[in-house]
Image 1: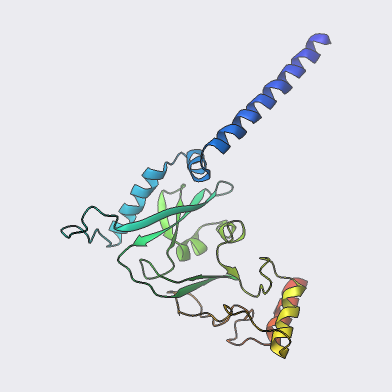
Image 2: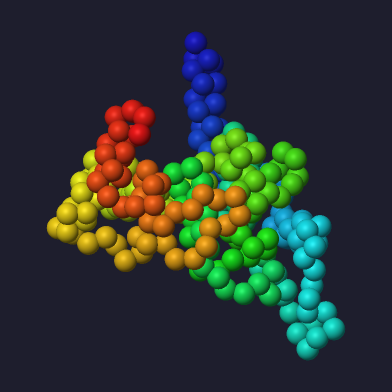
Length: 234
């Protein structure tokens, strides 16, 4: 019995030591580096893959042969890593030569608004899938990658349509605030009206408060939110 007790104590100590080491290892390495290591993908390798992805879509280094040769010709940054369910990595990037243009995209109940656009003249976010070693535009990922909604919920990408108080959830407070704004008791936020154009394949949206997508901001949006909360069709 004593031998068994000592053995169990030893197992507990070893388990605590392993957990502590893993915690230290995770905190010493930058979040993006650690996440990529868990997927057995390194930052520079992923950046190289992204450059090849741009090339495969007809985007090349336009700075060669100019006074800016050798300078970066595209942008690339890792943002979010989903290691549960399907492994994927959210990145932003594109051709530096693409000029500024306000643009937005609607993904389910979320709207992503950017002050500039990127290749391919859309939202400059891309998703790398570790499973098939491929890059997807955010629009492609929304329809083809299971679990992609995590990038909107966990990483807080985009704005939840109808979320008037900015707490990233739909509740009765949002419906009440819309009613106040419609009646003139409160004012709609300055950024409620969306400027710019809709990206390719996106539904058009004029107001972030337009929850029922009828092109107007009125009491019908408040009612639709109430129905959504109650689990009813709206």
